[in-house]
Amino acid sequence: MIKFFRKIRQNLLMENKTGKYFKYAIGEIVLVVIGILIALSINNWNEKGKIRDNEIIYLNNIKRDLQLSITEMNQFVDRRNSLINSSNIVLEHFNGKPVGDWNSFNKHLVDIYTWQSFYLIDNTYQELKNSGNFAIISNDSIKNDLLNLDLLYKKLKNSENHWRNDAEQTLHPGSYEKHDISSMSRNYVFQQSNGKMGVYGNLTEETFGDIFNDQKQKNGFAFAALNFGVMNGIFLEMTKKCKKLISLIDNELSR
Image (tube, rainbow, N blue to C red; front, side, top):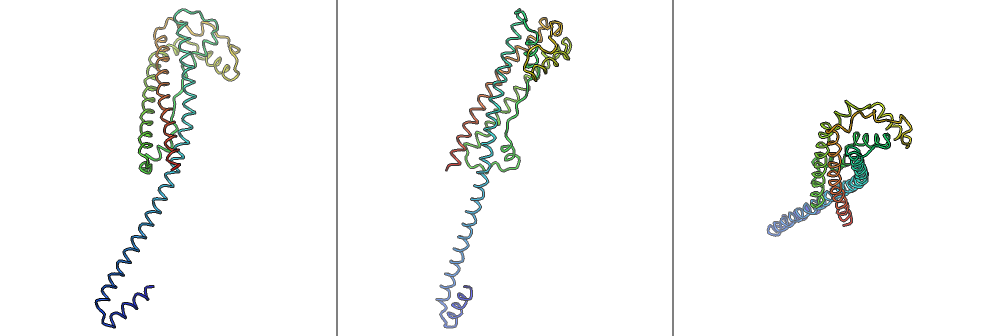
C-alpha cells in the first residue's frame, strides 16, 4: 500500500503536475490523520471495555460483601435484643425480684459480660479505597452510599467503644472483686456446650457476692440495655443502606 502511494506521488512529479501533487499530499495526510483517530478511538473503546469489566467484577464483589454483612447484622440484632432482655431481667432482681434459679441468672450475667464486637464485611470497599481505584465505580449514587455506609459503621464502632468504657467502669470491677468467676465460667461453658441449665455446679447466691448492693453494677446493666438498643438502631440503618446499595448495583449491572 505504501509503495502504491509512493508511485502515485512519483508519477505526478515526473509529469510536472505540482498542483495535483500537493492536493494529493494533503489528501494523504488527511487519510493518515483519520486512520490515527480511528485507531485511537478503537483503543479508547477497548480501554473503556476493560475498565467496565473490572467495574462489574468490583460491583459483584461489593454486592456479595453487602449480602454477607446483612446476614451478620441480622444475627447481631437478634443477639443484642437477647442481651437487652438479659439486662432487664437482671435489673428486675436488683429491684427486689427474688432469684429462683442462680444458674439461669448466671447465664444472663455472663452473656452481658462477654458481648462481642461487630465487624463489617467490606473487603472490596477497602481494597478500592486503599488502592486508589474507587473512581472505577462510575455510578455516583453507589459511591455516595458506600461512603455513607462507612460513616454509619464508624458511628457503630464509636457506640461500641462508649459501651466498652461504661462496662469497664461499672460491670467489670465488681465482677472481678466479688464474684466466683471460675465457678461462673465453668457453669456457663457447660450450659453453652450441652444446652442444659444448672447441671454443672448448681450455683448459689454466694457465687455472686453481694451483687445486689453494688450500685455500679446496677448502673452497668442499665447502660447495657441502653447501649445495645442504640447499637441496634444503627444496625437497622446499616441494613437498610445495604439493601439500597444492592438494588442500585443490580440496576447498574443490568444496563
